[in-house]
Structures are given as C-alpha cells and as structure tokens.
Length: 303
Image (cartoon, rainbow, N blue to C red; front, side, top):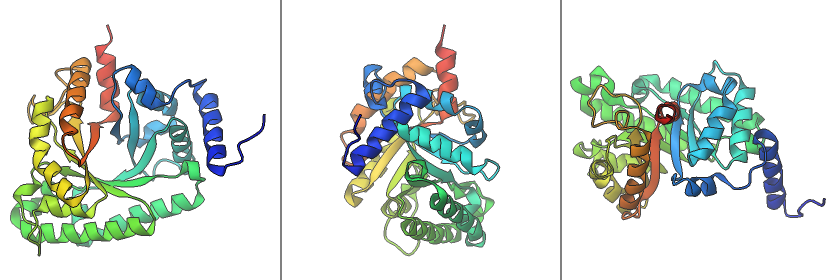
C-alpha cells in the first residue's frame, strides 16, 4: 500500500491507523457518531488528571460517543509526562483537541504571578518534548477571584490586578503560539473594568480568544437568558462564547445543574440550547461541566 505524497494527508493517514489500533476499527469520526446519536459536538473539563493514568480508553471512548471535540485537561505535576502524551495522542486520533487547564482564585493577584509563570513554563517545556500529535492545542484558565475575601474588601484593586495577570497570560500564550480561553461567570457585565469604559465582561472577552461562560442552569431558555449579554458583547468584539452547563450536584439550588433532571432531559435541552445559541454569531457551542459528571449521569440513566 503506497502512502499519500502530501504531508498533511500522510499525517491524517497515520492518525487513522493509530485510532484503529487503539480503539478498534473506527468507521466514522466522532462528529458523525454524535450526529447519529443526536449528540452535539461540545467541550468539557477533566479536573481529575490522575484518571488518564488508568482510564484513558474509557474516558476517550465515552467522549467520542458524546460528541466531545475539546477537553480542558487540568495540569498536575503528580502525573508523569508520558501519560499526557499518550492521552493527547489517542484523543487526537479521535478528532478531540486537548487544552491545558489550570487556575485558582489567587491567580488574580499579582503577588502570585509566579504560579502563572510556572504553569506556562510547564506547557512550554512539555510542548518542546512532545511530538506534534501529542501537543496541547490551546490553554484554558479558570481563575474566579470573586471567591477571595479581597473581592469583598477591595474589589477595585482585585479587578485591576486580575486584568494585569490576564494580560500576562495572553502574552505568554502568544509566545507559545497557542490560543487561550477562560471560564467566566455570567454576571461580570455588572462590573466596570479598571481604567476602561468597558464592562469587565467585555474587557475579558476582548482579551481571550474565546470564553466559556459558566451560565449554569437546568433549561436551555434559562442558559441563554444568562448568556445573552455576553453573547451580544462578543458579537461586537468578533469573539466566541461557549455556553456552559453543569452536571454535578450544586448546593446553590436545583436550578443550577442538570443533576436532578438526568441524562436524557439534559441532552434534549442541549439540542434546544444549540438552536437558541445559533441566533448569535458569537456562539461557539456548549461546554459541559464536567467529563466525570457526564459519565456518572449517563451511568445513572441506564436501566
């Protein structure tokens, strides 16, 4: 059998062969599988990185069947590099991108910038030793400084420092030639950015390549209602917004998560949410929090 002469086609050929070896013969890409099962292409988070040491095949087989096209994978120095390479390689074979995820509320404070530097340096070092099909294709941060006591005591100063650290992250990602995205709450439009006439949500949206909005509600109508302001802001800025939904139990009330309603109800609502979202040119898709929660929800739905 002769190989394609075109380098891009040749790489695609090897990825297809790898996917057959890893998961058995794959007759259709995950997007086609998703369409056949009524599942939308979507993104998700994987916080428990230790799972990639023992459950890579299970995680990725489920992701492919659910139409997952992007995984935000938290970086943990307690997981050895070969596990990351193996996970990303196998994800790539299924058409699933993997973005490096990390963050903490105190990442908004300039006094903790060294933590941001360590994260970006870890990615830089990893990318330098990984083959192309083992590399991360983006950076994803979850900072949430409104969980800090300083948010109540000195909010303007926290916002100013947060913006400064975001600018630093943006530059570092540019140096790595990687897109960078962030998780944001749906209510930042109520606050003003520091030294700017923009709302804080508009400012954040303007900085990142895309934003995943934590618009957590248990109906499509409610999600869009929460996300509407940011979707409109992103349209003006020519940026992209992922609407986020929750699968895990929330102490904030039953309306926050699909945990109580279950797997089938959630998937029906996600189809409707996608229809509502497509009204906006800034709509990028749906992000489901999180991969483990989705797997547990699917398991509970089985008779």
